[in-house]
Amino acid sequence: MTETAETAETAETAAEFTAEDAAALVGRLRAAFRTGRTKPLDWRVRQLTRLRDLLTENREAIADAVHADLHKPHAETYAAEVDFTVREIDHTLEHLAQWLSPQPLAAGALAGLPEGSTAGTRYEPLGTVLVIAPWNYPVQLLLAPLAGALAAGNAVLLKPSEVTPATSAAMAALVPRYLDTDAVAVVEGGVPETTALLAQRYDHIFYTGNGAVGRIVMRAAAEHLTPVTLELGGKSPVFVDRHVSVEAVATRLAGAKFRNAGQTCVAPDYVLTDPETAPALARALGEAVEELFGADPQSSPAYGRIVNQRHFDRVAALLGSGTTAFGGRTDRDDLYIEPTVLTGVRPDEPVMAEEIFGPVLPILTVSGLDEAIGFINDRDKPLALYGFTEDDTTRRRLADETSSGGLGFGLPMAHLRVSELPFGGVGESGLGSYHGPYSIATFSHRKARLDVPLG
Ligand code: NAD
Image (cartoon, rainbow, N blue to C red; front, side):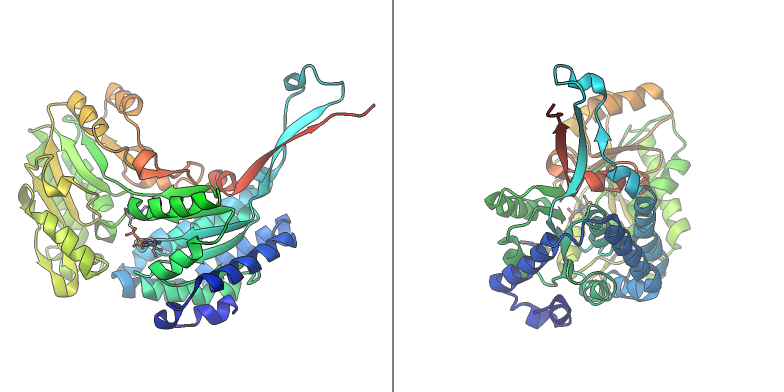
């Protein structure tokens, strides 16, 4: 079975994908890698260029598919899925040769070895990589890891999320049209297919999604001592200092929180601020939401929907926490949850129990920075921590006294757009990182080499 035939199948027939099918497919990718075809720089550049073509030539079809799955506005798909990934590819193309160049050690590091000895490191590809993607940014989170794995010279097997079936089908149709089908394949499907895939041996598994499945992935990988990258989520806090302009904060906070109806792994999850700032901030957030989506976000083409009824019910159940400062309306048939801000929320309420992953923003009050830092450190290490403050000491203390995958002051979620920054979590929010040069490090082995002259 070729990946083209396989990916042309419907979800029903794809459910018959067995461990034997998975073994045959992985075997074929492995054999392609063994030929050495993926190693030359030319091949990598060609694949990255074709991946770029895939994105730019099919912008509209991709945006249509994402809209069918998530009601995501086209402009948002262009920015956060297509252009984001194209930028990542362009940056990689520009620097790849330099990133891959061997790194010699300074002569001083070789003291004690015979005269004329040289040493250094160089990246070599790992082999065959499995990329398992989630539904919330179903293009970016499938193709940005793919770009990194190809740039590092690997064969790649892609598993898009079944939760966004139109995008999954689009990816399965497009990838074989653009990329080297001997070395890149797509398998669609859900738990049975992923389970069959996870039974195989890979040289790296790159998983993005929730921590429960992250544990399943890591257990399966352990069978083969396969290294993993786990891009997970969690509750990303926002600290708002009492001396900032709440209007400026609200515009940026609402823009980050309510994009994609809050279904972003690095979305601000909850706010910590002092009791005086909380009501003013809630009011300013209400104004910012109206600015973004009008008086009725349900009729705004710029506002998204919850991905399915299971997630709708989960998020809607969180609306009972605290006091609704604004929002709170829902429409299950339309999978609509209004942008909502909750005030007076206590730490033991349901909305604080798990990652919200929806358009609900609780504001909790703390007496000051000490309590905020304590609150953050009492919980799992988040994927991102955001601060709004003009104070250098506050910035330094948040940086020094907390741990998170990323730390952003002034503009939530912007750090992941910077290709030269590693993107990843720590502790419960993930393991490993990628983007730019960090993707090369993730999808390569850094080999040590020492040359000692015989004479
Ligand atoms: P999801 O339901 O699409 O699952 C992710 C992938 O895991 C899918 O491909 C799915 O088929 C597979 N999967 C699901 N159950 C499985 C099982 N039992 N065995 C094997 N594979 C299985 O997406 P999700 O997990 O709901 O995604 C949301 C979560 O992902 C949130 O926690 C979010 O914070 C996190 N996330 C993290 C990042 C990041 O970059 N760190 C990005 C996006 C989302």
